[in-house]
Length: 283
Image 1 (cartoon, rainbow, N blue to C red):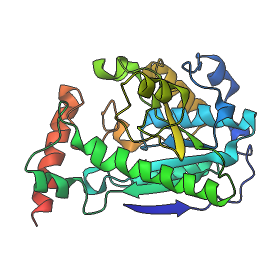
Image 2: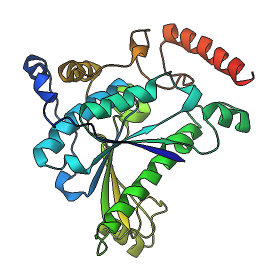
Image 3: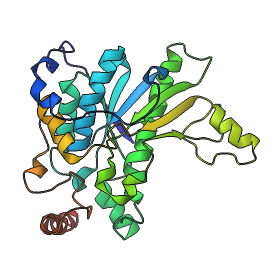
Image 4: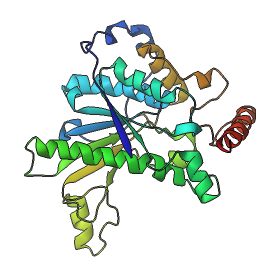
């Protein structure tokens, strides 16, 4: 995995937020999904793709974290998909982070991009076998968690596990599968010292996961899980951050260019782009 860090620009926090439209904010319900006590964590990770959902989520979370006085603990994380993603997507994700003067990390799989992995496996990812998510998003992002935990321990927190909250912009309206996901989960681990994992071990059913462990306790929260797409766009209009250009091309969602998650009209564009990507990968 490669990680690059974006330094925080010399813009006082709150300067750009004063430009938002109070009318747009009042027109929609921006309530967040039930989740944890936000003061319980040492680090907050915001996963940003450059798409509208993470864009809207970032804006509302920055408002929450600013109110709580914990913005200095926030890190945005973008998974670079390489040639499979739209051009300039990583730059747009960086722009969204810089808008709020947030620390920003870019992660990528070591050993080639998604098209290289497709060549290795001899098949594309699918809804039933989404290996691209684990290979290119979850695993690299967990290495950022390891890095943040190491920073906290180096700063002197060595008498307890470091607590990390990972946030993602998944919404129930996007798909049946996402509608079934709980808005808040603890990422269990075999050696996690939390009461939930301890009770599972005592009951003879030890957790099989490895995200949380003796050094860190990790939870995942989907704060805008219940939002509809109109609420997402209302928040973006109020924030005045720049949306991804793929929406202007007719795509209802921004995902990497290989994923079959669009309407029939946009699927034809996706197919043409996939043919181009395959052809270019062979050159």
